[in-house]
Image 1 (spheres, rainbow, N blue to C red):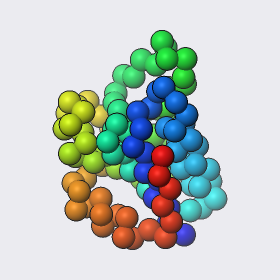
Image 2: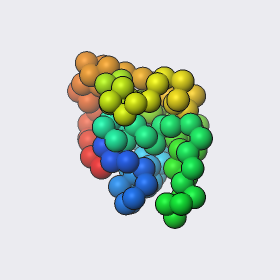
Image 3: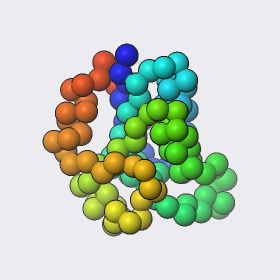
Length: 116
């Protein structure tokens, strides 16, 4: 099975990002092909050097590497990245930056989609 997990929310301030990451990691552990897609404010999860200390939340950025290490893939949508004011060099290494068309092709190739 192939699963897309779409994160549209910022990583800190509520539990949406944590739940998206939790589901992505859990699915890779079940040998499901996982594609985590960061769009809209979800791209902030991919930012290098996150300082979540004041938020009271756990740093989720490092877990993106765990998803990749477990065989999943993480994609950052290019237009959302630009809208957020982030550049390619601001993003954690190992993630793929995709345009809207490439994102749509990923979604056409999965069996199930979860949106956070």
